[in-house]
Length: 374
Image 1 (cartoon, helix red, strand yellow):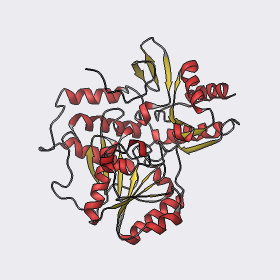
Image 2 (cartoon, helix red, strand yellow):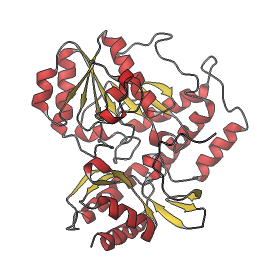
Image 3 (cartoon, helix red, strand yellow):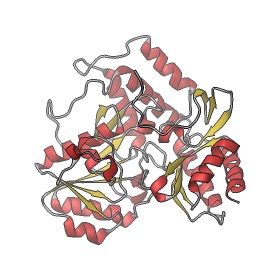
């Protein structure tokens, strides 16, 4: 049997990782500013994280949601305390970002009894069923995914949103920061307009914080920069630092009933142990503050480089737009052993490092970046 060839791959294997660094099979050391696509939040192989998962595995690794799993409640309490305003929300656990968004859309439809969802240009919400239909990329939407229930509106266009918003809309889904779309930042007034229109028409505001959440923006959720509160928030990526876990947090006015949502693997013992360790480390090591501080420093310094067309983002989710982005990314990887992400359609390099990156590691990147672009 062979692997189904759908991934363009870097030309090496990674065999070791620690902190903000990874090593390939030949012993080459790389500064990881990609984090496996914003997944590594607390740094690779953090000792507390490794011990938490190991200890849990030696007790029980898995059982389904047919028995009491108290570690889920511990995660909900620790997560709520970190969110800064969502302590009274409820948590539903699943396995991935796409699954989190699927459940968010389904819950909005259940709650309102409506079918229509508003999404935005350059959006990315996942590759499955309803959420791929809400993703602005026709190349990954199969015929079976096509639906008339998704209405696309230009991102950050308040007037266009007002035109299509009505009492048939179940929910509006928007990313805290657009990731695949090139680290596009929603304006404060745009998110506030979504909130007010959802209130006016009885729809739910769904914040997709899968890539931009979990402290990456310098706040726990990126939309908190805009002083708005959502009805449902989806999470994944940094939530488990590489262990597959996702979830949604749900406003108190949305009532659950048995069977309306469900998952076999979601909220299993090992996944919760990983997610609790992440919460512990974010709090103990003050990683949100570090993300804000080092992220601001990186953006200020990058804006001094004349070859760069634009720098966008919050905290440690940064988009660097430049004409020769592909060559720059390749040279950073091959010549300087620095890994970065990319939004190809937007000519943008994405910086998504672990939240414990240091200023000296940021300086190492800045020096290499300046050499490459100049």
